[in-house]
Length: 296
Image 1 (cartoon, rainbow, N blue to C red):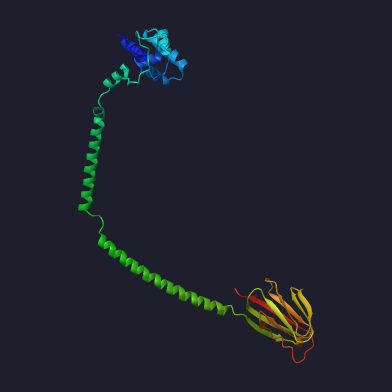
Image 2: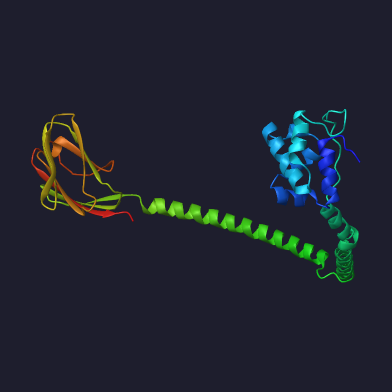
């Protein structure tokens, strides 16, 4: 039987020797896709003419054909049959190798392979359905909580809580108002004048707020000094109508105010006037001894 193409010649020789494309690939070390291209006379799929000639020779040697003659046929130097030069035919579909066909015959149906898994899934679904139905029946037939009684109890609790909260707020507001009023009354500063010897007067101040501020207003020119623990914290001379203020240390419990002329100035402590009792036109010096008690 004469073959018209190189691919047909090599393919038939391979089939006669019962060699698959996979086996031929192992023998020749040529990639399977190139062997398929040669079988189909699709030489354009090969990297170049050099590789076409080399692969034809290797293929032919493996299947017992004359590789040099087939290369000459490819180059147009020879013919496969008398009076006919080999032309490159249209590619034709190549069936799978014998090895692949045997593998397909050996593989059982996918349905029978998956059957045990399907059966197990159906059994599991049936069990879940039965358990779920039994649980639903138990809950339906025997309610654990009496929702009506619970609702009434909760409503009552809310009402009682609201009433109690309102009373607590009213009581807290009343207590806060009373405490504030009492605190304000307790913290009002009081000034009490003691014995006046003419040159000295004792003054007691209670519930004073810190810091204690002394204010001086000069009627006529006057020298004023303030001592705490026998040390001056302020001293200076004021002209007529001049004012001056100074703060006592927050730790001071006693202070002495020295006026150069008793009638020439007024003295205030935290805005409240101190009765220095100077007398009419008293130009004599006078000491005002302060005893301080602070508001808590």
